[in-house]
Image (cartoon, rainbow, N blue to C red):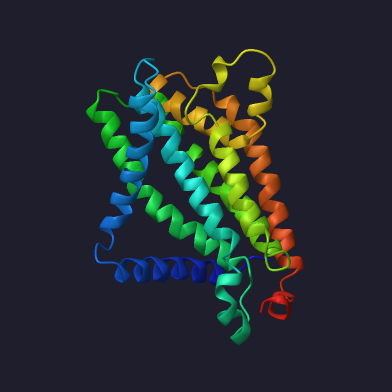
Length: 253
């Protein structure tokens, strides 16, 4: 059973990690804004200018995908190693292991919120007006949070036993980066290819962000599939973390 004080511990751990990260660099919290802007700027220059598609507001289309992807990929990459990274704590005192991927997810979300606010400000600046569809944003954000947490939890639970999962995770994220519809609209692909690509729940979420923020035509039923996948992954991650909870101190070197 997940206890309230352990959830508070995860929140405090996330806060302390963010504070420590900000204090280590000269730019501090400012880097959380600069880094994603540089990241998105590089891809915009490469795909939005050098390989200009000439399809409406491609900049907003691209940024919606990149911002959603950055949150997911960053959370999964750090969550994968969250238990191994805290081997010192695990050897000294008992802490339920779900605390670590949850804390990692919370810290990643805090940095994402800054970038997401910048995205909203940009969309308002270029002329997009909030509409009724924007009311679905909290549900969409929460759904992506649980999807990333489920994936992170599963990887975190298995990585201490199979350290090579960290490398495999990086390769898998790179593959998903190009298959999640960040640079193209999956719905415009003919044939069965679109159906296969939408088996990736993140592709559905990225498409939902665009439908809500820039297309003003959102069908909430598209969230059903990623919601089911997210719930299944989250339950599986909890079961694995609880199942191996007492074994990590023995296998982590």
